[in-house]
Amino acid sequence: KQEVTQIPAALSVPEGENLVLNCSFTDSAIYNLQWFRQDPGKGLTSLLLIQSSQREQTSGRLNASLDKSSGRSTLYIAASQPGDSATYLCAVRPNTGTASKLTFGTGTRLQVTL
Amino acid sequence: GAVVSQHPSRVICKSGTSVKIECRSLDFQATTMFWYRQFPKQSLMLMATSNEGSKATYEQGVEKDKFLINHASLTLSTLTVTSAHPEDSSFYICSAMGGWGTEAFFGQGTRLTVV
Image (tube, rainbow over all chains, first blue to last red; front, side, top):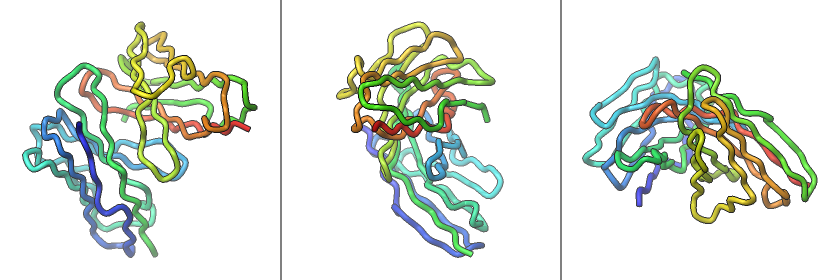
């Protein structure tokens, strides 16, 4: 059974710092991995999608990497801003089966202070 | 990214009544939709997977007669919480995909409070 872990569970950084969020998964047979952001009381916003054949994806100040063989992904946020404060979730999709279900990590709660 | 609209965003209902939550994909056809439940400060728990025109597949421990899912078209799925009880109070989120393995997009969520 796939298990997804995110470290740290919570993180507080001052504005302007660069930071890295970690995601690890136990079964490397994945089709893709997706990073999401969730604001309190809201749904999920898709940030980046990395296919299993890719090593990284970039969008603005965000860069996500994937090392499938070691079961790890990182989300790098450059020059953090207070508006980046949210919970960040990673999720993996298996490369087998028809249900295409995502397995979510427990999330990292990020607070960027002024 | 694509837009998934979920309605209502908040609902309060009395015990014993039923509540319907709608999930619409606004700019793409969703062959598969997922319904999740989220408890405070926890991650998402998948309740069921629905494919257009067929019966939903429920996860273990989820009562299919209590949580009725209908995916009648490629742009609409509904979740009906029947005979709601206070323990059904939670945050419910839907997700939609245009095809197998494609990017998943999520609705804004529905905060259900049963009094």
